[in-house]
Amino acid sequence: MRYLRLFYLVRRRSVAAVLVSGGVVGGHEAFTRSYGAEDSAKAEFETSSKFPIPQDYRGLAWQIRNDYPATASKGDAPWADIDFKKHPERFCDVIKRYCMEGNKEVDFNVQNNKKRNWYHAAWLHYAENGREPLHGLTFERPVSTGELSANQKRPLQAWTCGYYNELAATVFSRIWKDGSSPQWDDHVKFPNGAMVFKLLMVDAKDDEEAPILKGAPMWDAVIVKERENYDDPDTWSDRNDYVSKVRLLQVDYAIADQRSPIGWIWGSFMYDGRRKEKDPWERLTPFGLQWGNDPQLDQEAYEAGARVKESWVNPAADELLRYLHSSRPMWGWNGRLNGPADNFISACASCHSTAVKTTSLPLLTQDSVIHTKRGAYVPAGCKNGVTPGCDAAAMEFFRNIPAGKPYKEGQISADYSLQLMMGWINYQHWLKDNEKEGWVEYVMRRVTGRPRYVSTRRLARMGASPTHVNSDE
Image (cartoon, rainbow, N blue to C red):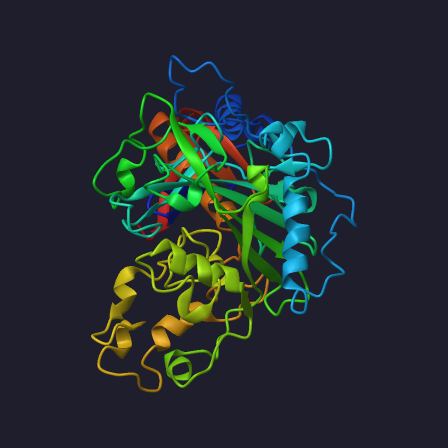
């Protein structure tokens, strides 16, 4: 008798292990790839978007680039010799040039970049907020009424697309080397010099709704149907059947850099329509940098006068906040860095530190803070006054977690890459959805240790019978 271990991958981010036993499964035939399932997985891996292009659209459809390289040439890191703490604006300027070179000329169709190679994250199409078909944008979050201006009377939609340099793409190659049979068995750690940047667009309709976006670059996109709120993610797949315009609001980036205590440097730019550069892509104001979460800066320390030491926020960013007359009180929590479309109770690094392989951890929500009568925002645990440790739960979110280490023990780290995490989760969802069609995944550890796909009908022919041995559903 031989034993095969199967893993049924369940949609609600749980896994039920299955032991298959019985019958003789002899010869090579029993371990041959089942072409139907693997072809389907490969085709899904290569899918750019599952949403249709409007019939009257005459432009090109967006194409994913996921031919990830196994190796990359080193030395393509022009920021490496700049002291980002002493010269943050110079550091940001080099990053901006690096991201724009060869990309803005080809409308960020990175396959056509003649300067350097860029790639997209895998499997971001297979979700309610999945990639739209014209620029590969995913729906990141709603921008609450009043966040971008006093004239913003409705929630806006924030849409994003990320781009990974060649060194960062080698991590995707290790996991997605075989698009029909991905492998992720241990903690991920991006190599020093790996870099990703992200364009973020919003669906502001005119200059009055968001004056700061006057003259901003615009893209065509197929976005979510407009509604009073976007609180239910299950509605995010309800897309328009026509093209909308979205405008550039911000550019975010992350760099794997061993000079940082967490192994990463984060940064953000915001479009400023008051700037006079002829090229609108050059009207990006550096917002700041973050290289740690300031874990000692709890609410008690903040109210005693302590301030961030592991973020640099450009004074121009604070001026922008005043100019916007925004409803938000700060960019990131208690002076930490976060972008203009991001949640002010969080920060760049803290949010991404939750990236792990198998589950999406609960992040801080608006219920995590309260607005006091004196006009301050404090963690909910401090509602009866700021006392030592009253924000202990919130400060769990602002730990300095080293690169390649998980948010919690027992998890597998995605090394601050939420897109890597979400792509893998989407892939698990696809596997679960396709169980309905009779396909299952199994791992024959004694032979290859690699997953293969077989149909339940074929399992029966093999004389094997699946028996559940545990489930956390």
